[in-house]
Image (cartoon, rainbow over all chains, first blue to last red; front, side, top):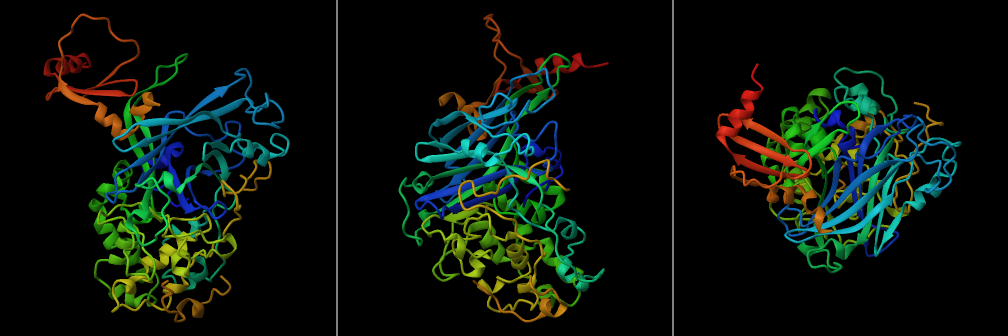
Length: 453
Length: 90
C-alpha cells in the first residue's frame, strides 16, 4: 500500500482510500494492458462478522490521459451495490460458499463499469457484475480461487475483476515511520541499534482490488495499438480516484442514510508514495481533492523533497554528497512529474508533456518483459517494462524511490553529481510477497481462519 | 538483501542507470451539469420527488447550493439564504 492512510482525512475513510495503482503491458497477453487499482487497505483477514467490501456510496475511477495535458481523456467508472439475502441472521455466509451463486453467500456485492471519453459520452460496459466473497476460511470458502475465477468477467475484449486480494506491496512500515529507520542499516542511524532483518508489515494483509485488462488501443488517443516506443502518443498517464457525494444525511432508526449532491474527489493516486512521503502534512488533504493537472502547486515538494533533507541528518556522514546538493531535483520532477523525455535514458522515454502531474506513465509500445526476467528494480535495473514505466506488482517501488530520492539518478540530469556510495544499497529489507502470473496477478487473499496477526 | 552490514551499506556502487444516464457520475461532468444562477421565481408547478439539501455557505452573500440526487445547482438568493439562516437562530 504505497498510499494507505497517507493523509489525515482519508485515513478515517478506508473504503475510499486509494492505496496502490499498477499499470503494465500484460506479459501473458500481448496487445493488452492491465491496470489494477487497490482500495480499502490494511485488511485483517479475520475481520468478521462484517468483512471488508467496496463502498456502495463511493465512485471509484481509473483515469487515462493520452493527449499530453494531464487531463482525463478516458475514465473507467465503477459503482457497487450490496444485496443481503437473509437479513435475519448475523452471518456473512449461512453455510459453505462453493459457488458465487451459492445461496449460503448472504451478503453480496455487484458492480457496474462505465467508460467515459473526454468531451464525449458515457457508455455502460457492464452491470450487475459479481464480486467474490472475502476469503473467510476453509469451512466457509474452501475453494476460494474457484470463486475468484467466477468473478473474472470478460466483456467483449475487456476483462474485469473486483474483489479481495492479498496485498502485493511490501514495506517495513514499523521502521520507516520510526524516524526513517531502515532495519538493515539502523546501526548507522543517528539513534542507532544493531542492524536487523526487515519486516514486511503487509505480509498477512489484504486489500480490495479493481483490475481490468483492456486492449492497448482502448487507451491511446489514436485508438490504435502503438508500436513505436519513441512516439509521444505511445505514452499514457494513469491515475485513480475515489469520490463521494457532497452530503451524507443520517435520518435515524428505520431510515437509510441519504447521499446527495455532486461527486467530490476524496482520494487519488498515481505514482507510489507521493502523497505518503512527498506532500507535506498541511497539503495532503488538498492534494487528495485536487487533479494531477494542478500539481505544479506542489512543485516545491518534488524539487526539494523532505526525505532527501532528512537522510543526511538521520544517517550522519553517510549522505554527504546528497547533503551538499542544493539544486532543484529535476531528476525527480522528470521521473514523477513529467515522465522521462527522449535522450535521458538511451532508447527509453515515457514523457507526457511539460505539465507537472502525478500520473503513472506507461509507454504502451514497450513490450512486456517475461515474468521470469522482470527486474524488481524496473528501469534502474535495465528493465524498461518496469517502474517508472508503469508499475508491475513485482516492482520494488520502495527501494527504487528511496534510492532515487537519495540521489541515485541525479546524474541523469546533472553529470556533476556523484551519488553517495550508500545510495545504491538503500533497502528497507522487506521481502516481496508471492504474486501470480495470471490476471488479476495479485495473489489469493489471506483467509481469516489462518490469520496469525 | 544478502548482506546488511555497515560495509555493504557504504561500499561504493555506481549508478545503475539504468449508459447515458450515468453521465453525472463523473466529477468533471457533474460540475459541468451544475449551474450558477439567480434563484428562479416559483412557477407553481409540483415539486419533484426526492429529498433536497440546501447548503447555505454564506447567508450574507446569498450563496446556496441545492442538491438532489447527484445534481447540484448553485444559486444566489440573499432573501432565501437569510430566511433559511434565521430558521436556525436560537
